Length: 288
Image (tube, rainbow, N blue to C red; front, side):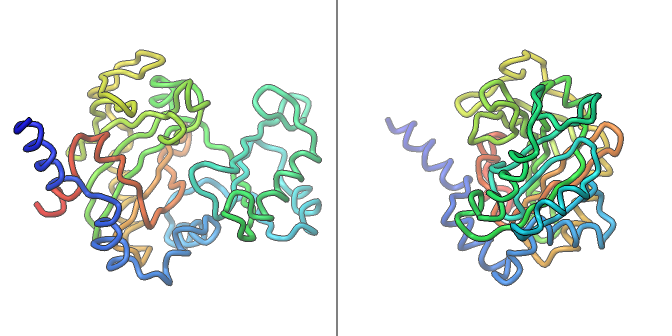
């Protein structure tokens, strides 16, 4: 009993909780007037492009129900991702492909254009952004890099990096699973994989309950796998930190087979599950 209490007390001294994160990092380091620069994906992408930071190509934006038909007709017939500008947790993202006959498909099934228009309207009505009016952005589809497809072949894994005052604190890969239905969201069942920041190699898998040395579905051994373009990733993170007036932020990066690392989005209040994934507390790192 005494050992258990000492362990809990020791962890509390190392792990960052939500309240402490907000009071110690988010509110003092991220002026509220600048939150929109991270929360609004359209605005974030504009800032990233202005600073020549690599992102997926923007194909279209629309913020008015009356302009949906015209705007969608101008989207090139190519594989793409539809996203709400102010969504979170992967909600509202629709991935579309184009088949050999030039028809839009979702997965392996045809999808009628009126259903696409309906989805665009739902985004604008704010269904995925807590009831606030929103904006649609359509981007080119990311082709997952072969190194991530070896770990799990479906969906787009991403790398989450947390930075404080231009220094990288911690990183993890978020990889889809059968349970997450191809989405790289930890709350939907994706796994987190710790990252050794000294060399860009993957550490252990955390499935929400325990640590493993392999992907729970494919059994692919991940410990020691090298993240490609690691020097480029570090360079991108440093550029992002200089581009945004936010001194505590999360940076999400995907790896495209042909274009390399691309910034997906910026987060002014990154989650704390990354500590469980890496078996290390952010408070311990910050105070060190």
